[in-house]
Image 1 (tube, helix red, strand yellow):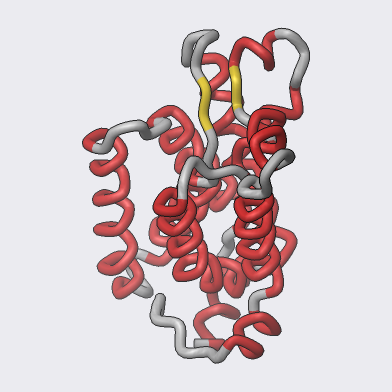
Image 2 (image 1 turned 60 degrees about the horizontal axis):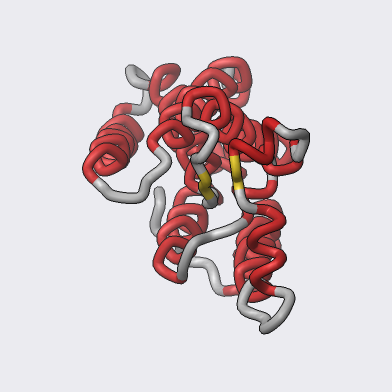
Length: 202
């Protein structure tokens, strides 16, 4: 299910939304390395609760396209590369981008309200956890008719949540808010009709 066997051109044609998000995140990361303007780009998009409280509301969106280092970017983009395509195929392009964006935004909103004014953050992990949450909703609907999905995705979700609390420099609030948002949106999106359609494509 989550093993990618497509070549580059097949992947791009089959999963245009995931491809766009991968390119956007990687492109912005490369921009932040340009001498002179890169640091300014990073600072302008950084999630900063104090600045958000003072009217810089774009910072509820921009942090999900910035990363604090190469390993941070690699982990998030690898997760998107592996898990994003299946959800884009199941939910459709519009619904996938809605899940991804709203999970990331609500993760940043939750961070603003639940963390202190000095708190700063970047990363797409809130949106990535939204993808996991949407898969959780799919498991909820298919646990009796497609148990293989449950056996694959539930351990991934559990391990990801556990690692959220064990790791350092992790925005726990965004992760949890993201996965809850993805789950709730997934519950509203998935229904027996499109689940049956998805299973026929496999």
